Length: 319
Ligand SMILES: [Mn+2]
Image 1 (tube, rainbow, N blue to C red):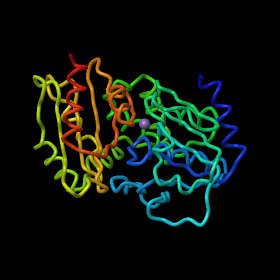
Image 2: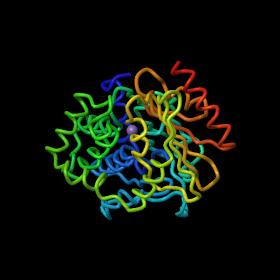
Image 3: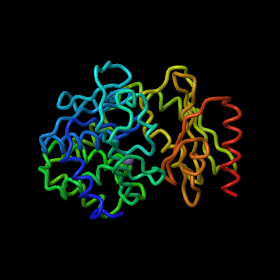
């Protein structure tokens, strides 16, 4: 389905109802956050009521967004009501909204907007645009289609989404339309230097310390084609965005695996690939998902067995 066919349906969903809950996947990245906040601004300019709820709330890294918006934490706040009109952004599967599901009625009306091809198209209205750099880019086009006012705040949130999901305009999804979107967002008031500094160059000390430990664990297998990185401290790292880029960015490496422990005893596994390897298919075999070159899953069980199986699967596919 194309923009032209689906945008009127999305617009109807947004115009016809009121009192929305906006959410995204757990461990939200910049696009997940940017698109939720951007959707909030879009609804605000339509005069609609909404709340933004994320499992875990707004990550510390995004504190700079400050008190301009309220983001509720579904794992910490008690709500005395449930929501029936739900907007889910950047989440390939309904289950990926985590504990936020506790705030939702049975059989809710759902609008699902995503760019992960693994998205199963759940919801009353769903739009999966695999070619879009980010959900933020889709929302920019939607806002333009609906002719809503794009405030400087909204432009900034969407800019954060495109910037982070393209890996600072470096990944293969850095398309002409992604760059054009950003050019327009800058014209509307997004400030690239300020936003880049805030997201990437004002890091908590704990982030760099955890990065150091993770880098120290790096091992190279299969003639240097597979990089394995681990962070197995008992304290879960709050933010490890970008760690795996160091592993996949080594000369000769075709695939990278980053395994880190979670507080509840599970493991969070991120996969990256270069060239022809499809890591989404591997992540899906463990109940996860993502993109062909970047995917992940969560795992409960023996770490040794997991590593053994994963290494074998990847090396088999690398041939
Ligand atoms: Mn995204």
